[in-house]
Length: 291
Image 1: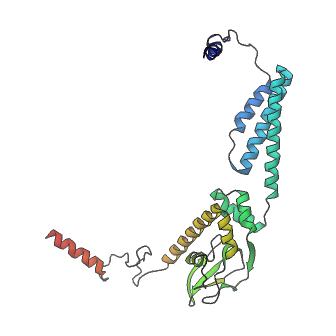
Image 2: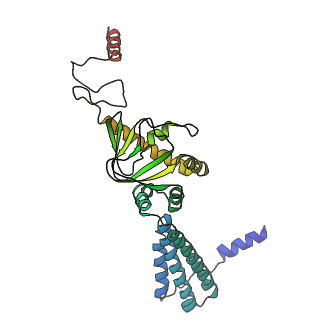
Image 3: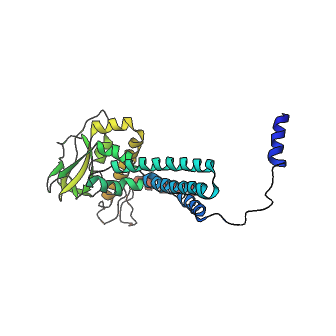
């Protein structure tokens, strides 16, 4: 206990205080190192953010090592800064190699920059997704799926072109780039179930799409829960977009808009239109309460 008190006394009470400060400033190398440290710690996340951070921090430690060797002549300061410079340099080379090794075909580059990168998906994760898929060409007026005939055995995402969706020859909606071709069919089945398309999908132009085989994609989901949650969000959003596209086409006879969120009621204000039984019941209950 006395030894600890003596140490505390030496550190706080008897430690020499700076009575005179050094008049001349340190050299330009020291100030350059400080600037590099400040700018380096402003880097972001991701591969390119890490490259930015480690490159500037490495230069900062290198400048500090040169300053310790030339101006201060302190071997310990030089050694620590040089070791930290080597560590930053090795990290920079490692990350640069990873970025260089992750290369994709043009379709995957467009898909990543347009859909996955805005969601913050890293390149290694996208690489895992891309390696389990294939790019397929669909010529104009050729069918991706036929109603009542084509089995649901894959999930596809349109990269270029436009696909027409019909049922019994009646037009439903279009599928545009970066939308799934068969998200409703995929979501309607469990992993162990099988089914067939209830709509026909026809290419209106030459199309290119990325496709994942059903069994292979479920195996990927089992191995990577993050990818499973990612596809769940993407498919859910895609289905919602398709439902609203259908909603825009549904009108009553007098051009009143029909809302799919309330499938039993029309948004209408015309007194000529018949009221629903629920509306009449509500009005009668209000009349009874008022009396």
